[in-house]
Length: 218
Image (cartoon, rainbow, N blue to C red):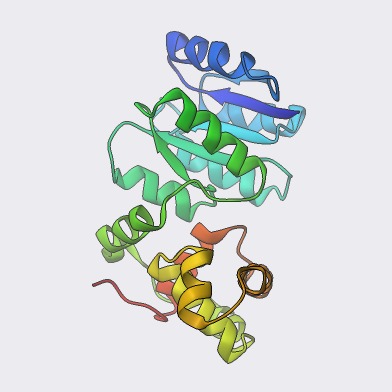
């Protein structure tokens, strides 16, 4: 059973999400929060699988709340919601450690599938949108953080190829086809890359690859 904490400052929005999620046989809503500070506290208390996080809220916003939740080292993963495609806030939330983002006008099936994907350890951003998102906000990329060069150096040549492919937006199937590998082998490579660079998921791996200059926007 996937447990979800709903974070949104609008009561009707929370009610709509709750009705949708509790209609799923494999999901349960463990609680609700109306702002970031409450989200951080309830995440620590309830330890949900997924925090469905609104980005724009009064007081502590979803970005800062996401940062606190991720830095706490808990098991909860964050899926942020934004009103506008390629919202700058969504990008900042990804950098804060969120596992992906969806638009608030996503279809119900897309939202449910996104929550399931995040709970399973995947990202919910499509490869094409990943390229578009990162490319749109490269001006926000900071200098290389300490330790990034060492983590990059820890990768084998093949692992660098796989990371580059992931950052380019290729799926596992596309990586397998282009690098002449079995898809199961690609999955193993991706898992090792994530572990070596300290990334929670593919989204964080993409950001890492741009940060270290392994790939550049086109």
